[in-house]
Image (cartoon, rainbow, N blue to C red; front, top):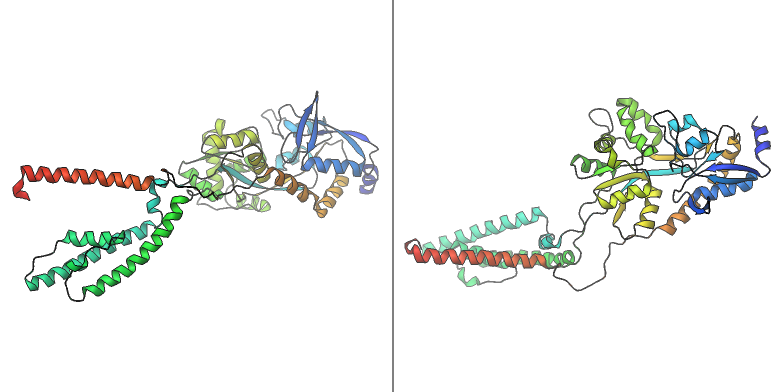
Length: 451
């Protein structure tokens, strides 16, 4: 039987086939010509072109009116490309067409030849504010240690000096004088060491200044870097990060209605426990088992979608990426399609495509029941895969559309925005000094006995 099919399908004698397709970069680039349409490039375009030569057939394109891949509607009919193929309006359908269980029950598919990572796109994290660039060189722990060290050394030197002066009958030293000396040393002011007269205190001060010089050297070098380039806030890089952000109500997620990624997200509602884990082993799915036996990541994604279905579910990739640019939103779909859309149409937007993968989606060509050449096409698919053609077509198209995002900056003069932190500190110090001056004069004038 297979030999008969091979003999019949290896030469279709220029038979004209109807191919259902849709615009889906980089798999199929479609342009309108008069009343018709023509594909000009794409991974599936190259595949179909080469397949038509090998099997000797011609083809014309037909596009679904609803511009969908295929969704099982409430009336139990299929829309989009799958609907055209199932109703035998088209002999075959392709355009990065994902293979899942419902679609496989509706039409026949070739062996998979697209292996796409399901990822997400969101906004790239914002640059850190330069207002607090002065504190960026050290962590909070280091700043606390510096404060504690300052207080300890103030207490030690003050106690030593007071004890020594008490023995000599000298007047006591003021604790604030000691504090301001050590605080001044931390900002590079040497101060007057002759006020300290306790035996052996020079050795303590020498140790202090060695430590201060090292600290100031580290701080000064890092401060220049942070003022010029303060870095970025934490980026949502993985699906676990995305789930955590959802749980904190910082972001919402969505996908395309009826798409394979959305159907996977919905499955968390139906599979529990080991059934869920077993079901996704075939996808190499990164399952994070939660307390309820479900994937906590998928549950967070599903909860986010369901909270606002009308806004979180879209009908096309451009619509989804546009939502990302407008609000705190992550759009889930195939990584190749997300990268292509972002770099082709949103070059000026700071968008981030995650390298993390929710699972690997399979894609192929859908075949009508009347087009009985599945095994023959599969032979060609396997041959093209072994030759690396699909990988080459994908690489060529994606490289053309992508432009690397650079985090480096040209060296420029510092602006007021770069130095706003020190200026704010000066204003704060001026305000504190003014208030202190007014309070001291008020106390001296009206409560002289308290001084």
